[in-house]
Image (cartoon, rainbow, N blue to C red; front, side):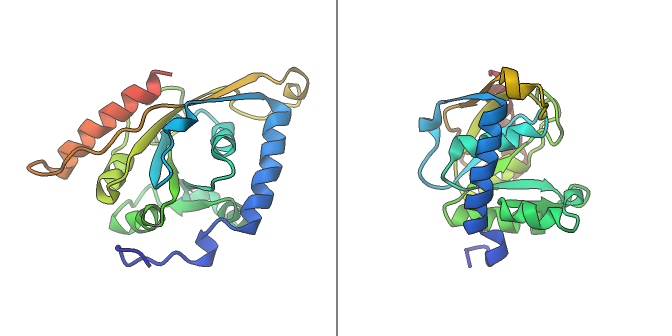
Length: 208
């Protein structure tokens, strides 16, 4: 149990299933693309929030591959957690979030993950698009509450698996940028501080 009073249950921990599924997904990723990871040294040993652009179904796969063998947790929309698929997603370190009813309860598990020294991946744009237009404040707010850095990541490459990519193996790049530390909260409203931090995140990710 962490300082928020939230206990990470066994189902919330990527374990043996994560190793097996992660290894399998890495094999698939490298079969369909020529991956290049740059700037991984920016990733701290302790807790951090990875914030990235979200262009399709493949960027989570390649971000997980880029941080391997260190496990990462992903926030995903609740609608994906249907029977069978939900079990697979949880085994891969993915947990559901209700986008229509965000609130304090939605912060508990992310804060517990970070309090335990984990890596949390958030796509702050909230939708699949090349650039971050309407950046949400969730990642910035969680970072300030947890007191941990944000590591901007830019993904460039295919948006989905295509059989033709087995032959041509298109280039894929996952670029880690320098960590961004949350600003001091003294004398500032949380909303204003989150807005400032979100702008810094957006600028870093969109810089490519």
